[in-house]
Image 1 (cartoon, rainbow, N blue to C red):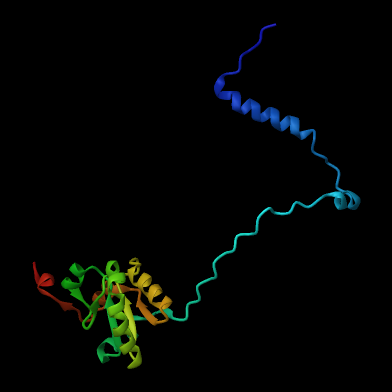
Image 2: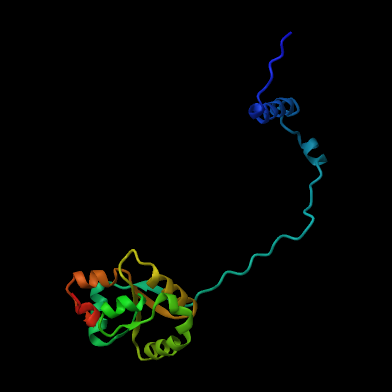
Length: 179
């Protein structure tokens, strides 16, 4: 009798098949009766369940603002406006009246900005954040952080790109005038 050797790379597969075949005969195909079910001892967990931290309640909110409403607020001085882009881009151009608060410097400037935001909200102004465009998440990320600090803020999600395309005014520095 000639015995064929199993190649080592197929050995794990052969062991798996043997295990499945051998355990298949032990599985009962009959349903468990009520008497059998009552004889089964429930296994109790050995340790206490992990307690999940409470969900952070957010009292503030962040909402989107449309270009027409934002333009009215910007023109009437009814908004505290933050440009969350890097200073380089802010220097090229920005929405008039906007203050540069780069996303990357959020933590370093948040204490200073708290005072500005509180004064603006107390005087009835809205706080509006913007970035480049709809695909730019920085304004939304800062808005979420400010909402966690209990502020109601607005995000101009279309960004300065759509502001420019609509022909609305932009403040241009010497960097923006360079050809």
